[in-house]
Image (tube, rainbow, N blue to C red; front, side):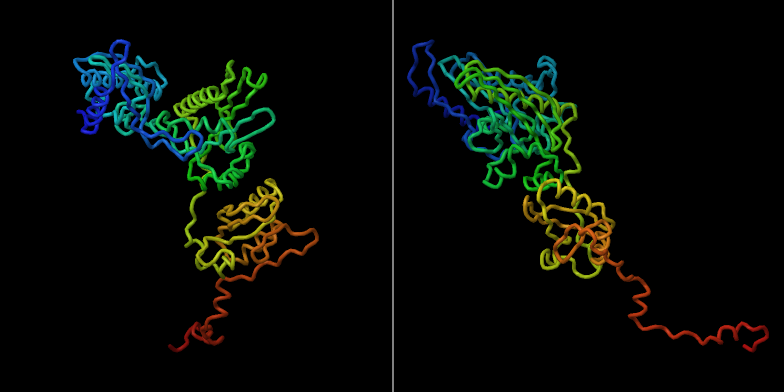
Amino acid sequence: MISFARLALIFATLALAVAAPATAQGGLRAADAKPKAKQADPDVPTAIGGSGGLVIGGVDVDVGGKNPIDARMNGWREAQRKAWPALWARMSGLAAGTAPRLADSALDSMVSAIEVEREQVGPNRYVARLAVVFDRVRASAYLGRFSNLVSSPPFLVLPVLQDAGVRQAHEAASPWLKAWARLRAGESPIDYVRIQPTPGDVILLNAWQAERRHLFLWRALIDRYQVADVLIPELILDRSYVGGPTTALLIVRFGPSGRELGRVRLTNRAGDIEGLTDTAVREADKLYIAALRAGNLLPDPSLIEPDVPTAALEDTGPEIGGGFGGAESAGLQVRVATPDDAALQAIQRTIAATPGVEGVRLQSLVLGGESVLEIVSSVPLAELRYALDVRGLRLEGNVIRRRAEGEAALPPPEPQGEELQLEEGPAAPAPPPAAAPKALLPGAPK
């Protein structure tokens, strides 16, 4: 069935075709048609994912018909028939000829839109280049065992470009970043999350962040951008001379560890950087799709910390939020000196291994200054302070530091068990010392 919106578009385009003057080549008329979806500004990175339809673009058709409407409908149906094997090949990794044969009615139910990239409409002929948009949910019903590849978890894209001695990531001047912005979400089953960076994002997601193996910092970034993991496509340009031939090495990485999924060598003799970067994006997308298909694109579960309920900290002694965390805080927030990544990572490992500590979260990062950590604990504050002191960390108020050499260790906290409760509560009177033995004497009167 053809939807009402599609029929309306057909008649609107027909009106344009009739009003347009005929050209000299074959009597074809150029229809002033525009794609249904508005294209984003390629110079501005936008936050987009893969929640839209699956797009198969560049489908060429050249068909005839009884009239312009019939020719256009025949062209759209032909585009659907050509696009389905291409979609099958992209999702399965198999040849397009292995795609199952589907009736036009099944294709009509899957196709949500047809975008016109270029077209010419004649009295009985239709020549066009179209993009077919498949609905993800409906298409998954026809993809069989490959239906789980229709959409991946959301992945943050950190595009790293090395041009001569300069490394860039989210700087506005990066042609590599602009090339990723030109990739439409529907052209890939990978849910690429690209951001419109603020000045703070440019600092956090710089090119050197891709080489840091600091898990705690990556956790903060994953939580900030609400993604499952990170993709790091790196492009290294090698220019012969200004305006001359350019070669590039594409290295596709995945995760904070920078695990390499593949690399491709690219060459552009014309020195067209935009064309080179667009080709590199398509090659990177192919490698990521292959990794998804092979099961090598699974998010690292250690990047997502389990939530600890506030009830775990109730009735464990005095309020440990202090003036820093507040009564509603899920843990103790402390300041710690962080001259570099290694120092922060070392102190977080020590805190996490302390008995009674259930989790450590990075709240704010200031390298070269003081960062803020949140310690989730299941023990009273006095016991936590002593346990940290045993491991060489001194907790003073809301500041935690390394215990200085020669500094005396803290004494163990006083027990707060049943003995302390008996001392505080009213004590029951003890029986007289002679009462029990007297009752146990043989022959004693009852």
